[in-house]
Length: 262
Image: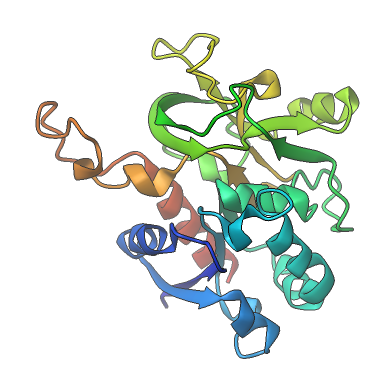
């Protein structure tokens, strides 16, 4: 039985197409759904095996990146999303989607209870500018299924103005590290601790992606859907890249896990 993936879009979302494409290549049946369809009750998240919050600028990043869509989840879709959360199926938020997940309080989810209160955020880059470039990530935790088959160091592109990871308190950050929830960190091209622009936003602890305590919810600022196919790399002919991009592995991991829990 095919795994169905819901790619949730809103006004300003602009990465839903390539994210859907990557999911299809990973073996899912992908459906791009506007948030208004959920609000009207026409579509139920629980009817899908994977829930995806793609990148872009949902609601024009009004107030703050991802905040308006996050409020839709907290105040108008709590029951529908809660029904999905109970099932333990994969959820991924990419860039703006990551911002939505943290501002809705779905991440870091250290106690696996969703109360809608954020304990971490993603805020303005230290550079004060939009950062758009290829960077390198280190897989710093193997606790979650999301990390399966990923190299220790791999490249992905970033494109964001508010990607600096900041916890509410130092204790929150220490608990994240203790739980193995910091799944990806920015590194330089040698896998060493980065300076700007290898860490493009100044995130505390060079954090690029985290999971919830259960490991089924992932948020990351870099875009795996933009390195899912070899021709997405500007040097794919020079480097004679013929295999799939490393980002596709994340979507394969989601499809495989969803097939097990459905």
